[in-house]
Each structure stands twice: as C-alpha cells, then as structure tokens.
Picture 1 (cartoon, helix red, strand yellow):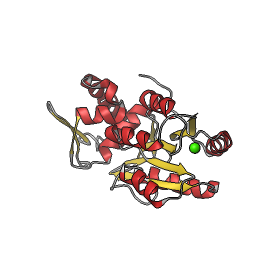
Picture 2 (picture 1 turned 90 degrees about the vertical axis):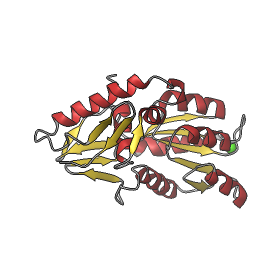
Picture 3 (picture 1 turned 90 degrees about the horizontal axis):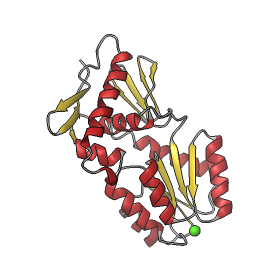
Picture 4 (picture 1 turned 135 degrees about the vertical axis):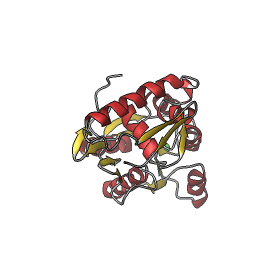
Length: 238
Ligand code: CA
C-alpha cells in the first residue's frame, strides 16, 4: 500500500517490431514516462492486469493475436486511453479499432513529435469532460493534472500512490455522478479483484486523509461523499 510514487504517467507499449519498440521506449523514457514494453498480445494482457498503466500504445498486427483483441479487452474493464500504432492504413481497420474504444491512432512511419502530441491529447482527455485544455481538473483549491500525474491543493503537492491517484482521477472525471465501488474497483484494479470492495474503501480513506492533511481549512471536506452501501460521489467544495 505504500508503493513509491512514480515520476510520470506509465505507458505500456505493445509492438512486435524491435526497432520501433526500442525507439518508442527511448523517446518516452526521455520524456519522463514510466515505460513497459512487450512484443505480443498475451504478454500485453498480463501486464495490463498486473500494472494498469495510464496509457496503452498498441500495434494492431501482433504475432500472437490481433491488437483489436487487446483494445476490446481493456475497454471491457477500463477507460484507460489507448493509442493505436499501426502500419495498416486501411480505413476499415482504423475505424474498427476506434469503434472498439481506441482513442486515436498514428500510422507508421510516424514522427516522434506527432506521436507525442497524440499521446498528450489522449492523456489530457483522460481527465474527463471537466478537464481543461491542458488536462487539469480543478475543484476549489484542488488541481489534478492528468498529464503530469500530479495533485496539488493550494499549490501544495499531495503525494498519492499511483492507485490513489487513479481513484481520484476516476472520481473527478464524473463530477456529481455516483460511482459505484465495483466500478472504481474495476477501473483501478481490474476484473481479477471482483468482489474485493474493501480495497476501495481503504484506498478512498487514504485519499481523503492525504487531501485533508494538505487542506487545513477543510474546504475539501465534502469533496468525496460516501453513498452508503453503493459508492461515492464527487461533490462540490464548501
Ligand atoms: Ca506489427
């Protein structure tokens, strides 16, 4: 529960072409991402289960399965941004990937500037409809920056673990709406933890405690409102 806070967004690269994969890896590490990369779909799904990265880059033509299977699987469980990297420029394939829930695509060969721009855009949108153009969600003195993976209260940084950050991100992406414990659990931990709702309770308590410590005036006291027996709702600040 005291996992080290990671430096930037974590990205999972799924690409069987060695040259492309290592070029992507170098570029994204240099830009502050925490990178994991795999060659095949089976391995990709295992990493997805274990790590819940902040964003997934997926090639459609993989040796062991079609990349669209990975997209469909991730979308059954989570809203994690997915960027398709593909040599196929057939419109139908791109449309299929997007309809399955991919957020955007780049066609090989692509420049790193283009890739990075698309990546930033999908990460920004991960902040939800309430995020501003730079991916920040603000509620009173609280600011969550989806791109920099940072939460501040009155400019003071709140040191959240990756899962605590993800819980807060998912809640803030649904302002005023009820988010059930099961839904939070699936979004942050994955299907393997079905029924383990107590994790959510423990982690939400930690998020509240850390926010309270950074908020001596108590203006965020009612930010995360418990709906007994159901889940949580992000209310307004007082
Ligand atoms: Ca390929």
